[in-house]
Image (cartoon, rainbow, N blue to C red; front, side, top):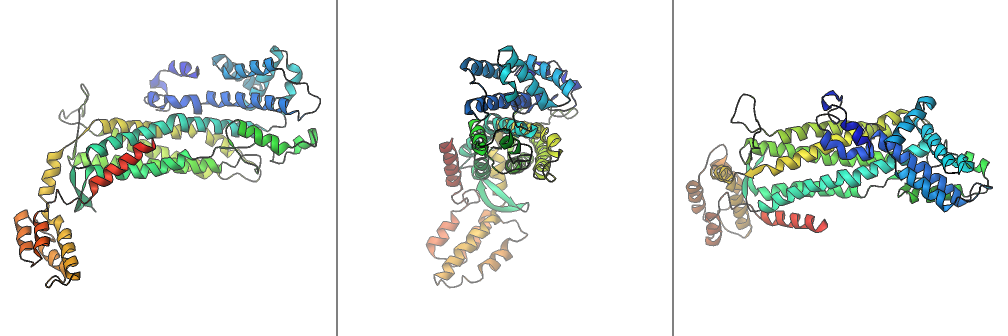
Length: 475
């Protein structure tokens, strides 16, 4: 859209919103779907298609048949929405002080130009502004989700899949409550995020984008008075479905926006999981489990030359919080409208692009941040070697199993291991000596003697590979 050209003429330093200034490159793909110009483009499209739909249906008796050439010209004009159209709408709105009425006048003027002015009163026929707006927003949000947000979200999961696959066998010391715990692998821990994010993506991909076109209070009152005996609900449904949307048959003046609240809640949940990813990666970096690959020429700290700060993850964390604050507010506000209509949704929906923009910015930063990480296997191995006491779980579990098989002296295994390990550092030789004195069957004793913190990871690698393979198979 040519509004990109107009925005490019604004000095980023003068923009009030960072999405239009410092972060404009990240948010720019949403302009074609959620900007004011995009909303007006969709309004023109909806009005033009409703005009054609009515003309073809014969619902308004006495109107002449719309010529194929007239349909073609109108659709081409609507599809060619450009800077000139934006200026024209701005001129009309200065007079009407009403954005949807400006669209109506613009289309009528074009119909006069192509010799179809005799049909101009079919434009916006029996419509309230919300009939046009709800469909236009639905088209814009659908495009933003399907063409911009979802591809970026999938790219993030792809990046995680690459890491999980590469690090499937790389053991790490887990930390529950911030304390050393049963080891896992870095690949498996990353696979957890893949699985969590996939579930939310599945919900978002199944979103129904609803729409209605049933008049001032959802009763088709003007329709049946102006043209009685017509199946107006059927015409409305076929039109909404013609736009690629799901028909909402029962509304007030507004489409109830419940589908928007559902979508925003799902994206907000996806954001929250990403927030958890950002804080975990930040923590792994601070523990030196990951090192960051420096960007040539970049400065980590203005005073400490050695630093490479985890700014991508910190930026993502903050922008996810901003996005969620807006998405939560949108979901809360949009599900309430006093009686048959109030205007709170109008100004609220104008911030949908801002909410999506901060989410998109965060996802891009996560992808970039993950791409600059290198696993520090030396640090991982050293941490594992310092914490042999995590094998206490394995030893007491083997003792429990032996007790259940009738092996003597295996009672109270938890208490015995607690006395040995709680609050103490235990190295490999000490643990093996303890195991050797338990009186375990030889097979059990040999299995425990061979165990190390780095090998005590269960089927973590298998879990990581299976989750990664499942994600790739779904792409």
